[in-house]
Image (tube, rainbow, N blue to C red; front, top):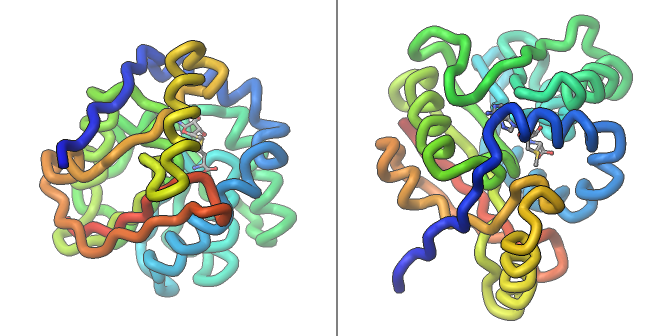
Length: 224
Ligand SMILES: C[S@@+](CC[C@H](N)C(=O)[O-])C[C@H]1O[C@@H](n2cnc3c(N)ncnc32)[C@H](O)[C@@H]1O
């Protein structure tokens, strides 16, 4: 079976930052229920151990980051996002829900991560690659590989083509997206394997979450 090309996306980081700044305060109330199960699976697959150097890329409101640092500690953990609005919500979440005194958050563009080569043992990115133009997906994955140590782990969650009865959901999503990409905040179903191969990542595990548990999503564990 051929892998479908990602639908076109012309939203650059400046426009994406504006979109996510403007939705930050209500983002979780709209999407969290549709993403929670896939993110829980991702956190499980990541299995971050205390002290491991960990980066979340496009951490948004810190839904996942707050759970990870609550379970395995804030030492050596960091989250980056291009949207200061999302990070303001993330900061409140980490201060209150995870009781982290100095939330380790940084405004940064994931295409050029402000970290040295091989700085991290593991990394996570959820529902972020599919909001980017194709060239930027490739650039972000390349930079993830650069900042991971050899053998380091990357877990990715992305909205994907629905399996079985979920195909109707992703087909409808794609129709809506093509009519108004901004309404969907740039997000369209994506099959990530070709991008991972091109970035030199080795896929270890793929899981699918959907069927009423979450939006059709793939959860991928890869190693550098
Ligand atoms: C759909 S949200 C997902 C947020 C969070 N990871 C989650 O699962 O709830 C996409 C996130 O990617 C961030 N983003 C978009 N382009 C980015 C870039 N070039 N660099 C860093 N973050 C970016 C947005 O600001 C937003 O927070």
